[in-house]
Image (cartoon, rainbow, N blue to C red; front, side, top):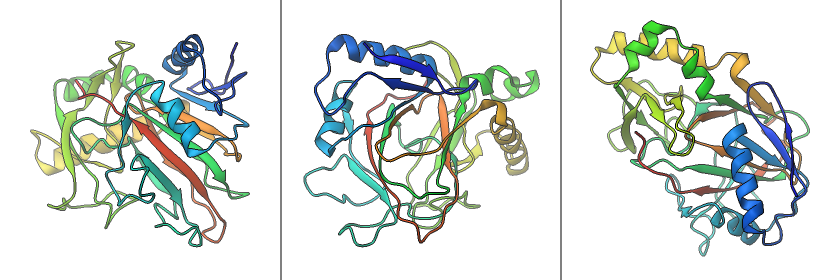
Length: 274
């Protein structure tokens, strides 16, 4: 039986009592999913996982999503992405250095991923923490004027990986992947509403002039990024984190670029937001 321990008032829980290097029972998968829906972000500490183990766990929860933002790093594993600055590993480095602004994975596609799993292989002694925002609470606590302003409105999300991989750009690259989504989305499993805009990738609120859009977005970003909505995870090798991209945002703290950092990411396919 798994044990679930809350990690912060905002969101996040630690799950122990399960070895993800082995196949897990359907009842355990159901327990994990319930904890995930309640806490939005779950961490399984002390795991020893191969890519095949992580893949098997993800398949127990849904369909795998192929890596779409960068070329495949491992020829026979198109769903695996190594987020790393390590140049002697025989693969392309990805998002290797620097602080990365809050975002939701793959929100620039028609169907963003449902979940992201990230497994820690090598971690700097200092820095590189990942922060998560509870977008349910961020939405529910919005002032009434902001709720009214975004009700039924869509925003354009763009990811210019080549020019702005970790911070927001000021212009739309016509070649960058992009998609418009509701600024408030309803979670298909919990039925709760969540704020669905982010500082890194949301470029413009539709139906407003540029100045109005930028003012509205900045107010939303500043509101969501308050400490009261955030859990910050300090990584330890062997951690497997899974977060719900439908109701959270995440960001990365800066770290020494000379320190080695490698995490293995696999995402689970999602649905079109509504």
